Image (cartoon, rainbow over all chains, first blue to last red; front, side):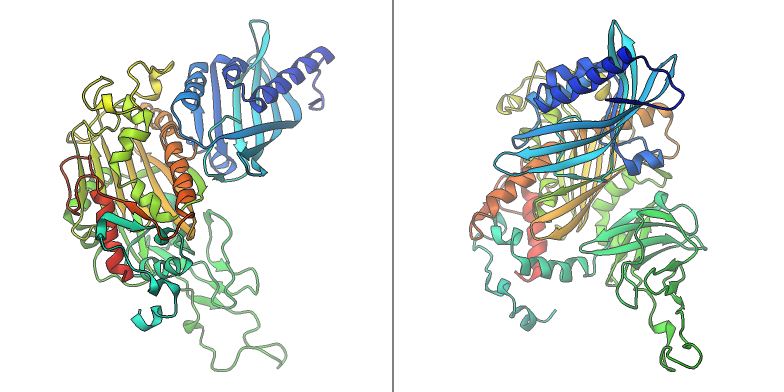
Length: 165
Length: 416
């Protein structure tokens, strides 16, 4: 379900395609198919994870900053090959997706996310929740994120953030 | 603290292993009585504790909260430009009166009964102090000047603010000693600083594990693929492990090397000759300090790690919660006069650090897994013999001497 800001015209087909994009993103992350993750972004994308505190203060360093699809691929390579961490399953849930504006540089959307973490032999727990601020564009026949800023409500991360939100 | 006092706690029964500084007993990471004594002797003791940066509170009335051990303080810029560090606890009913992380105020008002304090912690007003229509009020002999906020001793150097619950008999400069002070001044050379972002993470481990981690150059060459592969910190490169005379402060110094197979990298499973970044802008450091070192990681006793790794600068504040948990607060910074390209570089390189950092994730998880192993047996011991059994500084990093130095000082302070 994609909501639309008042006064904005969004054909049903476009809403369906946006819903598919958001659904496929959650599915890829929830199933741990991180190799698919960079493909949701344009080549020159901006992807950030930061806290509401940093975001509100306009501070540029958050938890993750990537300035290209290649940097996202580097992060996938690092989490597959180089980083040490205890095994876990992450599940992303995105809701309340609203198309806010549409302009020449793409569509602006926002949505709420909740990410649950399940460490091996431990109960599932809320890991982080917050809000996505997105810019989605047409890119070779696909809708892709040109920009995704993940703003976490919490200032505090439980232990470490390994996988993308 | 009187020795007789300690007799009431279980920790008195604790005996440090006979092998001395080459062993660390697991109970220092788990025992709540040890933790309580640490708060008393270390965090409430005559030490200069890191509070915040000057740049976080530039103007009169600007404040920021900070946690020193299990206590919380508010650092506020006074009208005359000086900094006051006040306990965040109302003198009336102990309420935490400040609940914002930062902001600007004219005075502090406790929301519970509106007791009002000036920026120096002096009690200015008590509602209904004289009662109402002849009823109630504070006793005649109530003296507001005796009920201000607790104010800490404050010392600052080149934009970094420290405070103490006890009045240390050393200046900040004497406290660091000449060698560590020289390395401190290398990063904090008097230029104005600029905060670039905050990160916080809660780690399920004893707070000392983090100090050890940053005083242990041996692990850096084995655990951290990113550091090792890209030559950002490696024990075959020119390096040193420095300490002050007491052993309480330490610095790991290293000089960037190449991604090349040699007799050392051949022993590092973490070394990947073929690992290449798809977007190499992430690791594109430029030299910005005099001298040959490209990395200086300082642990300043008891609650601060100063990170200068290539162009990545951060204060890492260690906040113990209890014997088995601590928070790590990262304040990333640059200099106010950084050109935009340098700020961009610092932002990119920050991807190596913090709760999601390519390097720091390894350390966070190492804390978790260390504690998980430690809690299974309080009476077991950790072995610290790499590089010998002494506690001297070393002109290399194939050593755990700085961990031994830490516990030499710790035992003296804790009476263990």
